[in-house]
Image (cartoon, rainbow, N blue to C red; front, side):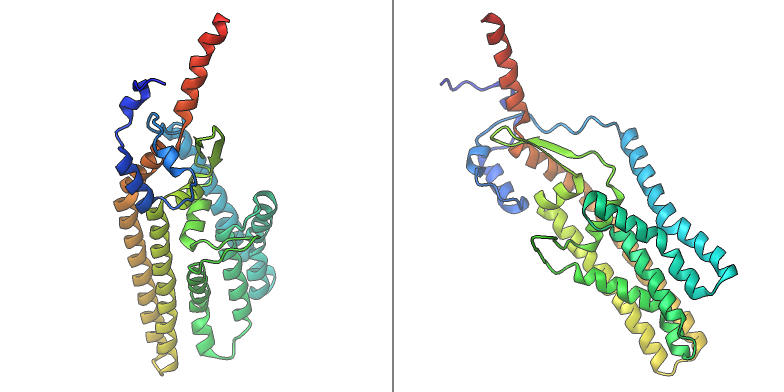
Length: 307
């Protein structure tokens, strides 16, 4: 075997030492053939052939579907049903569209649609608490109780539970995966020549440690923030603060927490986006052997023609 460099080695700027360091610090996958893969050389990863316009259209269509089913239809059902029936029945019926979507996604994709499930819980809890009209304090806590349940769900998803049937992921990752489900998948070829394809969000979570830590931190921030909102509202209610002040201060606290966490989330996304993209390209430059196998196929074609 000769020691001459192949054409695609010129494009590979990652040394063996850098590959090893990258594998230890940023990659969270188990690769038994890591050393062999690090010695392979191939062209840098080329992103999917989808145009930016196609990606945006697909994502916009998916988000529009979510908004119609999880927000638009429930609100329309609630306001129409409230004219002919009680508020409790209207609230419960308004949770039917997102509940049907949860069932559809569970059957079709074998996973739970987290966004729709949150809306279902919110409508059901609001409907149940609407039945309690005798205690003013409970009525004041009704909206905050919904944020309590959602905040609790955020915190629970931080627990790394893995079973043969399901695996718990951070809530913000689940929401992000559902919102960007229409994005093109990530495809690569391993060292044995087997091709793989995975939804981009799932691939990033499994392959890039920085991406996992980002969602763990974001989920913790939102979860504990919503729990703090409920705790402050409950403290105001049960310490004898006048009702008008409870409503005023409660709304201020909720707005501050939601706006604050939204700003933090947005700034964090913009800050780590380029880092995630760089780590994505480096991972695929190390572990994607598509170029090598394509070259082997191209080299074998002239030999077959000569025969």
